[in-house]
Image (cartoon, rainbow, N blue to C red; front, side):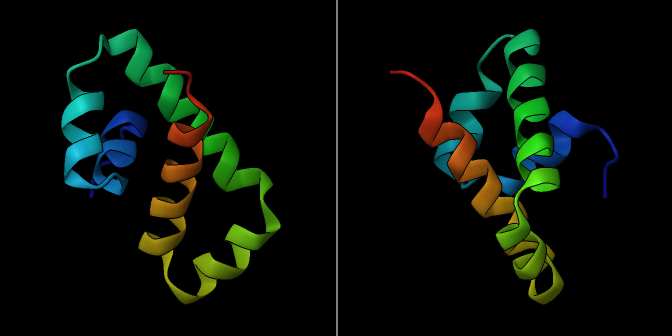
Length: 71
């Protein structure tokens, strides 16, 4: 498993979103990955999900970050 935040964020995305985010400039990928890490750290609901299924919690946080993106 990669420790790179962008790599971890991309791995948490579904294939379609992974491809779309992967095509964005590196700075944008880093911004989204940072938002994803903040979402994981701050949401207590995700903490509970993380205890049951870490990949599910990461995927849910990734979905939330992308849902907040304009466009």
